[in-house]
Amino acid sequence: GAGVSQSPRYKVAKRGQDVALRCDPISGHVSLFWYQQALGQGPEFLTYFQNEAQLDKSGLPSDRFFAERPEGSVSTLKIQRTQQEDSAVYLCASSAAGTSGSNAEQYFGPGTRLTVT
Amino acid sequence: AQSVTQLDSQVPVFEEAPVELRCNYSSSVSVYLFWYVQYPNQGLQLLLKYLSGSTLVKGINGFEAEFNKSQTSFHLRKPSVHISDTAEYFCAVTWYTGGFKTIFGAGTRLFVKA
Image 1: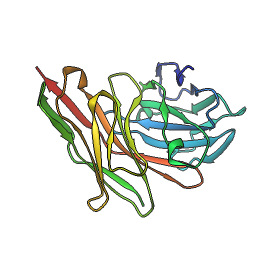
Image 2: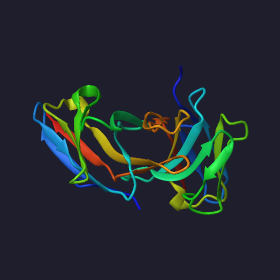
Image 3: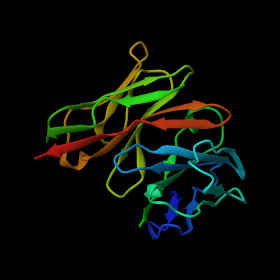
Image 4: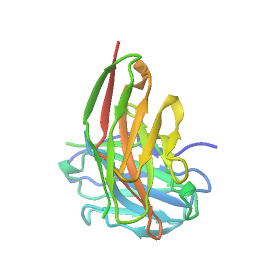
């Protein structure tokens, strides 16, 4: 089926604005991850969902960041009162259920490039 | 705690030459190892993975990697690179902790010259 999709692909926000980034995972994938990738760096973990439950949000950099996945499918990452340091690519990934290593593989979307001016 | 170190930030190489991208990790628990490739303005694509078994794993586009437990390394190799291999390559470590957690290295920029 279709891969992971993200929208918008590019977002320019003025400092102080709120933004919402959307992720559509692969159909049937239980796990969903959000990462932040700064320029020239590897992805950094933000948060993780299993179905609609947010099991780990230890990577969210501040209380301005909020993620939800109300029906266990589509997820939205919201950033309130954006700051320049929030400028980055936000990657979403999904994976199948299960605890074996074969379920550890993540499938990534193309990312949303956020630029805060 | 787990960590991943990619020893080279950039690797320039001529077309058809061999290449090795180095990755070392540390972990207090059992981990799975991955290499991902990222082309400009795209997400990450899986190249190959080590879950268990044979320490030499083969992936897409002619890449392979060898898991070395004693040296805690997972270096990526290709015997002959193409211009199209120019991209950013990320080594990643994943472990299970009530759900899978992944950390990535900082990346190695492979630049293939004609």
